[in-house]
Image (tube, rainbow, N blue to C red; front, side):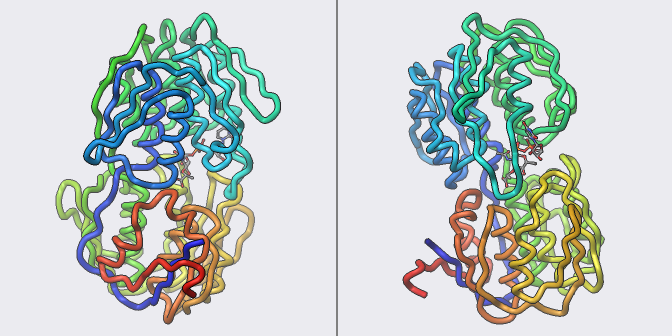
Length: 422
Ligand code: EPZ
């Protein structure tokens, strides 16, 4: 298993370029199942979760090809509308194929995702929303079996709780349902809007994507399209925090400043300088320990739960006590004990972490537990005195494209090592 070896203390400088959004590319790839014509996606990040989704599309019968940095998906026929356990257990977002498969073929057999490090993460809202559109769904032997032989019919959907992939799943089903669907309490994440833009380019009729009420007029069929995936706002936020925690001066390029506004507002309150360097670039400078600024995670446009661990790493060096409250997932503080191994002082009380800032962190051997926790450990290691070794960086490879190369190019002393080299 690969590890990262990092020697802390070098302020980052120069540029960090952001890749396409993993959490936008995943539903976009699933949406390619909705048409028998080719769809071309640009700026798809080359990360493990994307490879997993490509595997799912091919398993169902689609052809997936790379063409000069673009991904071409052609789901001409889908003779196996299924998502098997062996694949789904490695990526929860596999549930994103459920809606498209039912809408396109009238049936789907998708393994229910198993447990996940950060929480139970069931898909009950996905299932009930599809039932609202007329799908008959049974759950047996760890699989969701959906049938809609006469096709889906539009209807009113109201999510009890905001769900990003739940909104995306039912949106992809509704575009081919007969009649109108209104989705209320929909997720407002930029990735939902990006999916709607792709679906619209494919001929769908959607209004209100990006707001909490989305109206869809079903159409008979969708056609092929080309689409460029939006920048990854979580990678952008991770880079902004890497620059700040290392005391550097970095321009994060190819990003969307609006999508990280909740974070940059907090960073400025904490004492970092964040300036617009171009319409798609932010320059961050931070030559001091941050002030302790509290954060509570919320659905977009609130502070992203996917940036909570990275922000906590920064607050471990704050000049005082800060509170980080996680409202989205029930177990998303696993980075805290690992940060404590580096000298951080963090107390967890239910959904709240109380962080007493310290002068410095010390390098240590630590263990990544999930995708964003691993990013938090990398950030801490960039500033910790001495050497850190982070194990299980396969978590990182799920959602960050060549992150050690990008950080090294900005001055970080980081290398990927095979376990046997240590
Ligand atoms: C998406 O996950 C993201 N993944 C997650 O990013 C992100 O953390 C999350 O949204 C919240 O922003 C993708 O987009 C692929 P939810 P998702 O449904 O859709 C509960 C990363 O690091 N819930 O919005 O699975 C759920 O347990 C990943 O890139 C139900 O109870 O999250 C959670 O507590 C991690 N039943 C809350 O709702 C359901 O049917 C929000 O989950 C669905 C969700």
